View (tube, rainbow, N blue to C red):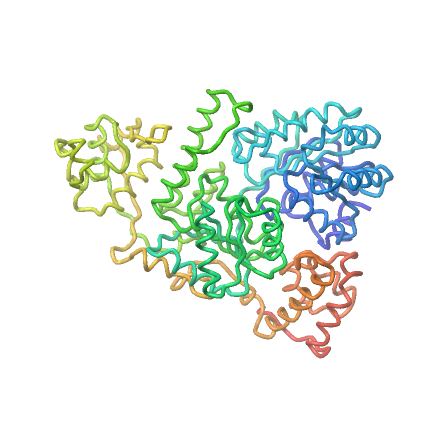
Length: 632
């Protein structure tokens, strides 16, 4: 079979997504590849399709047990024989899996990096033909990535010990330029085909909200999205417990996940979430990597994450099926202090890093935290901010909370000059809070101790509110007029561009919300439909924008059948069919095999397993008459 036949037979798709074909062709020609593709872009297809076409076995290096289990389960349900090898199996089970693989029963084997150097696995690897080693979550090999795992360095030694070098393919969703170069260098990719499809997830809506009462916002939002699956990320275990208790008290079905729970309870709670028993998961960042749940409709960050890499990876767990989903961050200035405390108390293993490297990592973490804080306070397009961080360009998206707000752009050049004068007078010895307090003319014990009233700039911006002064300072930092020291004190310093503002060669324009707008109003801006009230700019759509009322009834009928099958087979519902496939069934109303195979995500194997049951339910619902259950 050629690559298109493989794609259709096993995965049910008629065409490849952007970039997939380029990487697949590279692998099939024997060339190493590196794919940097956003979550939901179909990275796994890029190594699974060629794995089925290459003569030998493909090893997929994966960092988490849950990720391997999920991927293998999905492959087996698509009619592809695959297995995983990790610490969740007994030695006898591992031996049996390796025996079956040696006999040719498995084309794809997922393996934890720690297993690569065990005697039994090396013995197996020397006996079989390994055509490709695919490295998933490849950023884990870089010490400058957000999830560096020393065990990933074993991959390089393992490949070096093989009698014949296989094709190496590496994939990740989040990688800055430095991490990309690290992956290529450390893995030893030879003249790789590199694909960066872009970090933009057009189906995701990004929002930053600053509600006075986070809990009120959260309860309104979750209640308004009843029946939908969502993840709520919290910075600490304590926050997880409090938010989980809050939701349960209001009879909103939610599970919880953090490292303080027993392994058994974590697994039970994770299963409840995956199987839609409890569609909402409240968790720390210990949850999510390796969870391939495709129908997560929203991700809410109750606290600000420590870095843009972490945020984009966690937010990216929404809408993996390509359907419209929302990523909402609830911001509070206190989040910065909590994260700084977590950074300062983060344990780094001395055997992995020297003192200079540890200092560099601490400074990098501080810089990442500042970038994340800028994201939460900027009035510019949020999507564009994210894309710029990852090295891409984009204009205003019209589908984020900033693009959907009515801002008035004001010339703040004179006010910026006051900020510059203040920092110059203070000799760059203070951070944002002291500079802001000085410009406000505040009279606090701390400011009296520093004797800031002696400066000519004291009270120079008392006409502005504290939040407006801080927004101005953040804007000057983003524009490179100011910079901060790379330590926990984050002292404000003048950059060379400050001279251009001082002598009038550079204007400072700042977008400000209407004076009447308050945090409380913004905190309640989401209705049950998930569309920001009062905005015509948003491009988000949901099932209700595709299907009419009859179509939505049909969707619920098919979703009920999917749940029945999932319970029978003890698999997550999305393993049977994704929401996207169910919506397409409601649009196309297939009455026979040929029509069902035209539904997105329905391959031959899945048709043989489930097709007739869904056709029967569709015929029963429609009475055998094709109507129009969608808007079109």
